[in-house]
Length: 161
Length: 320
Image (cartoon, rainbow over all chains, first blue to last red; front, side, top):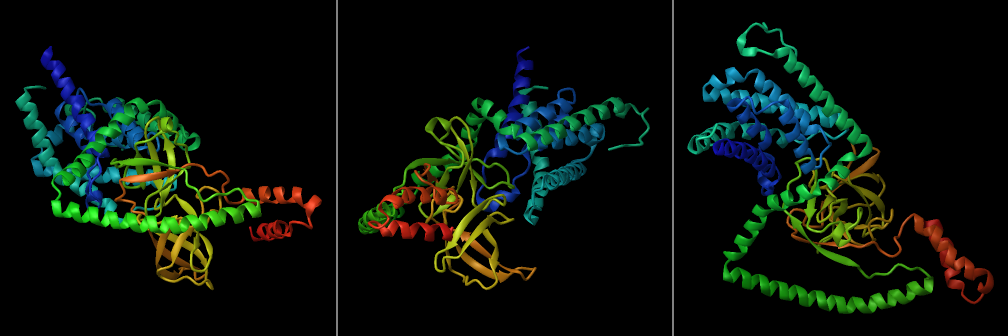
């Protein structure tokens, strides 16, 4: 019982941590290198515990991110829903990919996410972003193996599901 | 998203239901976006959720606060002494300038009274600190640690020691969001100090410069010209530094000159900023109508005795 509660707290904690990391500013030069943390953490939980992560959760996390960053309500909800849907579709394959293939898949998902964002922003009438805007998916994919191993290791140490 | 994979595979069970759910959620998100775009619900939701949102902003601001504290704690003694010395000199210089200015300001006040306008040079300001929160690469915004409870109102101009930074875009109970000058969606009426040419400065697309896209071809604009707020529009008080022109070139269309400017304020380095409270009588389009009033009610009775305001009023009106 206690362990279950701990595991739930761990789950919620990582998601909240991802949202806060999204808000933490980086020095000006590193700004475009910031990965989209909520997407990475949601992907990790997609692969690790399918029963917890669904489209509803992705929607709620996205809404929370929208409220925090003050973009149009529903924008990140839509992006995360699409991301989680694709990840859940291919979950059983992604789980058994070797790490480098998994990283490539995550990269594709993040690029897809950026394209979705671009479509939404363009429809909303925003101007096209600069080239540095496309760096973020690369950084996200590069960080993926480390994030995955770190979270997996912590989970194993805490002996939680 | 449509896939033609065989549905019998056990690895991909429950496809139809999953796709339907996705469509429902996507539709919900799109409806929310459209409603928000039309009605601006987000600010109301954020205001209601401020109890949760503000602590998270404070938490997210902790790392940058910590780095600042650490850099002060480990700063070299020599460095601090130098800085202190420099600040003392700056203060001395500023005080000397202020002393000279006060005489001019007083004279200005007298002349203004003669001209029967209400606008004063006094600043009614409030100090605020920047919370280090990143609200996305698309938006040029900063978060301040003062909000509705401290009397902050939407639209207040924000300045730092070097010039105008932007204006308050959204107010939460104890924090507020400031839209910077360099935001592509921001525009500020400016006047070129050297020539008096009035134009409008927009935020540039890459978000760290200002663009003046519609300067007449014949206008005299040079690299190094200072831009000041013109006060037209009534939102920003006149005379504050906005930026320095760093590039002038004809537009692609060949019909205008396009010029770029670096903002005068330290947009990404300022920690302490000043919020200007609404000036008593904002200068701009509304004011000419009001300015015509006071002299005219004096004019019929004593037109001969005070010729100066009567002369000034029509000139002022025609100029605007």
